[in-house]
Length: 376
Image (cartoon, rainbow, N blue to C red):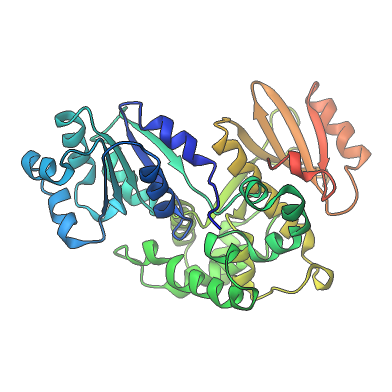
């Protein structure tokens, strides 16, 4: 079954903007499938190029207007998949845009730091950037049905939503996730010069997997791993840039006792997190259901906001006397606080202190009974 991605209409509209469309995202999230669907529905002459193929990579990196023109031919939509493979890809895309203004250009890349560094300067102000994540709950609901997607909530919490895992036979999921984590997740990092201790990256991720919803001490991580604080910070930065984890900072504006200088880390996919700690037990047998629920809601909210084009500042909120909200979203000057509870609700003292500190703020508890509006 082809899962309809929410980004497709946005990409279709973006290709009419006169700008280069950049599609980032983790490996194995379906970028190639998405751009092929874009080509199939374009209704015009298109050219799809995979830059992994040396034949095309040389021409794409030539900075030769004639060679690039021969490659494009009479296409009006030109798609370069795995564009980070091309030397000076940004400069070559600029040549295409300048020389062939009637051609819409789409470039995809899995390593944001790589492709971004190559396209930012040559194409300043001339790009539209999108990120494709593992399949969102909204996409699952649209494809399989609202009732079916909700009934399978435990499955998404345990196995995540990478396309290959969603469509795989249940007996193969654990093996496929292991291969995803072992073969694809770190490839962009390990290809960089200077990264020699890949085992430390995996160990770092395992530590983070047990600290979902907790403030992370970089100094402590370095001590446990036996590496410097600077190395930990570098690894964390790289892991963010290749879409394995993302950070959330603390909100602190009104109270001196609010915690603001620490961060929390979340995984872009629950299945990846569970594979790292080798735990796919049913929820009834686990003691980390709250962490799974919090991680799931954090990343699903991120997906739905980005796909809807909603710009938001996001935080957690905690005071030194242990009052906290898992997630605070600021949009349009309005603060909305959320507590993620597998069971239960927001404590009255938490609600009272937050509303006192931020008059007019809204607070809501997100549970398995009401989560669908939050992630759709």
